[in-house]
Length: 353
Image (cartoon, rainbow, N blue to C red; front, top):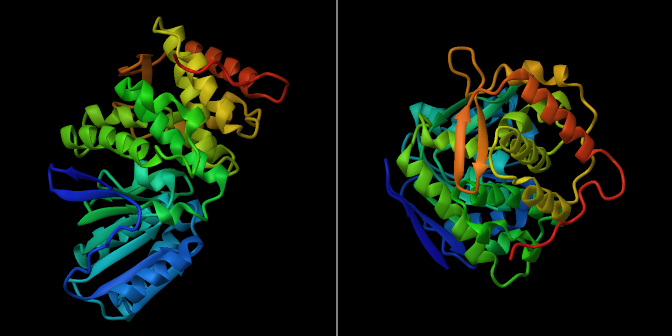
């Protein structure tokens, strides 16, 4: 087991391992869970004596205002008071939804995050961010609300489809680019039964913890965690969810690498192509650049109506900056060429030495 801790601004433990003992916190309890993790959730509810449970379908559809209202009403109808602890079992979407419910029900209740996907472990469960989507874009509603603890039991990954297992680790690869940690870029070994999986996940989470502690509310340094996400969120919006988050972020990372190379930085394109070769995503739809505009205009990194991109100028060297329209269009055209169907487009590159 790996025991980590977020120390600032509000301390809480982060545990990653197998067969974790999730604590039974005092006071009333409720459990919100992803139906895909039903057996794990029900065992937990029985062991901790949680009588109030609600299962939802996971995925981005869980982050709608209508679902948020349903969960609030469930808590209210059961007259759960302010000292309730909400146990949240599921992937990234349930984690985001449940955290926002906890942040806003009765002006804030405590919660524990029990992530059951690789995406939730390395990204959604740690960092205090909660949120919902709007039809106009992703994560446009939310609050910073830290959990009382994060307990990532790797046994809950057993039923995770291999495609979702891989997609979640795109975020860990992203952390490797941000930190310049080549160990996180070695994706070829990653599989559910790999002996080094726990160490790998903990290493990725440590990167995020360090950034979150330095910038809890995304005023500066933390914006680097959005590497690849500006384009990714636009792709998700323009395809109406046709591209999953992990696949969209992978393409977003390749676009960011193209930007960095075009702006005079190191050539990280082969490194990211190796990720895509391992991921084996579906081809990128041939969306015109103009189709992404409505979603790009609502990106959270805008300042003074100017969109700022997270650009990797080398491993561990990122800049958050505006980029000329011509450069964006040229790089997007190249991205479509690389990610279109065809032999050898995203073939696996040589592994890192």
